[in-house]
Length: 502
Figure 1 (cartoon, rainbow, N blue to C red):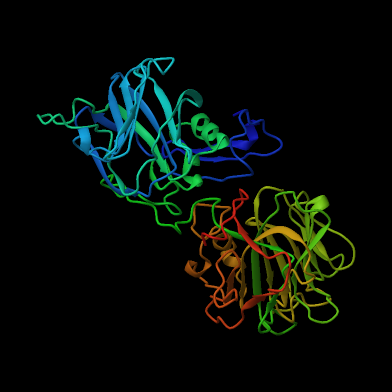
Figure 2 (figure 1 turned 45 degrees about the vertical axis):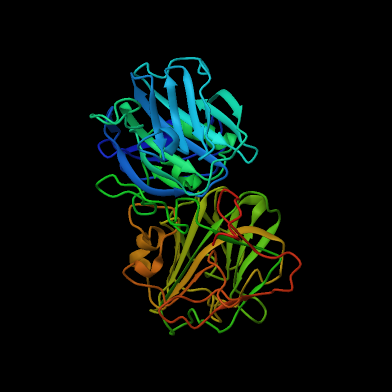
């Protein structure tokens, strides 16, 4: 990956915490990552094997399509990376490794076993003492592809598919030969990292990402592996303990960039109750929401309608110039702009915030019920603008009335939205970074020091046909217009449909 120096920052060399960005201003040689990912993660140390040690797992394979990826550094030519059997022979129904330094070894099926071990199927020896990435996929036509460092080395069609309930009992150890040291015949003598198993076929793009990003990269964990041993974000994706034992990842485990969002399409979501936000002398208040624009939408998308009458107060996304408009949120001419590149005024009482496509964005608006009723605007954790006095029309005075009120064909992805009946500007950093230390990605706002009074996770599954309010008040729900011909969807920021998964 090539990048401008300003876009790549090594934050902590000891913990290997890296913040990086991809976008139109960076040349991605193999286009490995879409959008922007901010990662702060501790490096997962390489795991050393002595040829006859092993690490156990409790992962059970569901059968059918399969992908395995691992980083290997060894001078030994014959070894098994992962298998379901400690003994080998007829007891084995799953094994991936090398028959010798240039021979791929893949075994599937039990009791009817099939083994692929074509001699010299690998161009360069695997046991040269350097790190190499090994990826093996088997699709629903039983076609096996074997990749080294992102290059397809060999392919083979099996007559059977990997069976169900094949236990990946351990990795790095191979099989025992019945004599101590038990695992020296097929055991790995060297190091391993970044082991992932998926119950599907990795795409070409994902294979390029894994092979080009290095063994310490947490990128593969964003692709929802069923078993993972490698660098991960510890707060958002955890499937290891201190002993190194690996468990199957829970279905709803949140992974960076893989949290589902709501794409309203043509559905309108109406609130069941009014949630007054503020008014002069009423209460101090704060509201915040996440959104993601993948650049597909055109024109304008009305997100939130705060006013049930003449629609004086609302939030609008202008896709064509990548701005979010907060209408009637300030008095004209009395604002202070802290970042002119991100925030600028338009006409009347509106403020416009410039955003980037293919990036998770967060907005926080704070209104203080103390004369002269100042209002502050935070964009992606940064105070970008404020006004010495409040808007001519108090923004959101009538509450969150609806989402996608005009039933537009909205392609915008909407994430969490919340309201606080207090000035929460003092915890703006927590609102933007709920997990603290992992900025720019959604967490659970219920766990921060001031939990929201009203809280909607629009990317969550419907409960009795509604998006339930899970705040400390919890009285206002959103109900979709179910007669829409273009129903809402749940998608993550990579565009993957999560409707059946959430």
